[in-house]
Length: 346
Image (tube, rainbow, N blue to C red; front, side, top):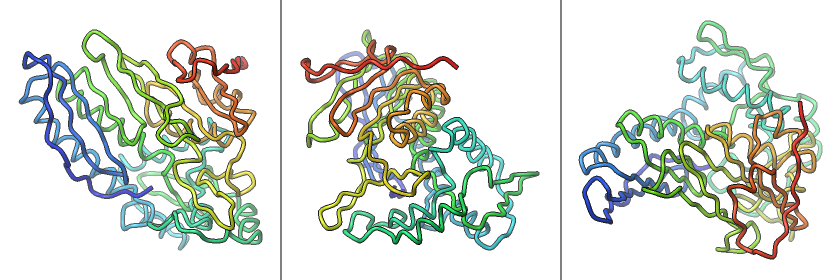
């Protein structure tokens, strides 16, 4: 994921009538993608004040968590590689500890300690999309033997350490959700209660769009520009999707997606797109990644993560979803028959 300082591309656009009833929209650029912010029911001054708050929120995330350009995260990884301890700020420790919870809940299918594996596959660089051979099996086997995980991270009295030098932290399956949660908190501090922040199709919404819910589209993983479904959300919900179409490279006709299975070191293949709904964007982001990796066993992992709204497309094109998800999803193809999967009880 390319993290760059955000640039304001478009001033607030105003539509509708009545100053406090207008829908106000701003577009930014960060994380290598466009960020759309929609505000409803706020006056012009309040809307303008959000710009600086959002810019600061996204810049802070960028400066802290970039995986390969100089950042707090790269300094942490340098210390781990040297077998050294490093002092970290409380807010940095909180994010790492939060990611550790999600890793445990996902049975480590979401594994932010797997940065070296992503590096082997060429995904920790700006030109990740260029064609190249996959890593040698010996390299993958060496990484699997080291078995880096978030359990190898120790944080005590503001100091981080890991005795496994193969640990390399990376939050590509988590940073967007963290940024969105931070941005929503900034909006709430401005007194805004009806808004949506959309970052490349992943989003969190609070309140409503006037007298109706927010409705967003879910991209079809195999139809360029096509929509798989639409989802209605309101109050405070996040919608995050992970899929094999987002980042991949091809080599000798073979497609290699960027979502890697830490159990075997290779790209996940069984599920090609997973969408989840959850109040917290960070958990939704981590869960969407983990459920792609989980394959056919995704219901068990969903329960472990506390996620009950799931829709996915398997590699054979079959759509599966939970009963709760059927209440909020409208498939674009009315002839498509989803398979309803009951979640197991704990």
